Image (cartoon, rainbow, N blue to C red; front, top):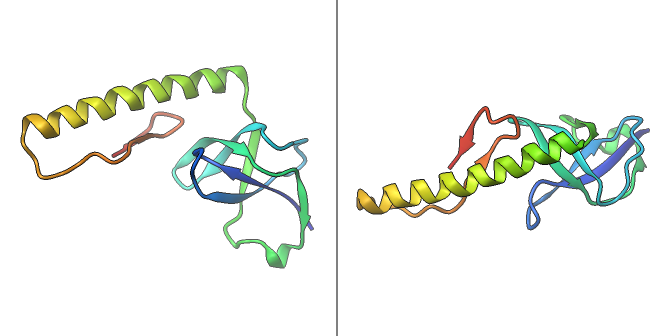
Length: 116
């Protein structure tokens, strides 16, 4: 059996399953997880549950830790960066009269990349 939680990266986003390890997590906790593109901040959507290993995804990733005050500050910085980068890109599209529309933008938690 493994201890698991469901998390969301965005308010309206998809729910993902992560291994909680020995962390004392509860619903609505903010956590740092190992995502496909590196560390990311997420919100726990369920209390910790026990699940048999055979029912879990093969590539189950771990919750690293509960988010610290520093993590939350970095997350706020990233949101400001996302807002500014989105506006900049939108303006560049308009100035260059490109046949495209900005839909979304996401900055990796460690600022290693921005996905447009």
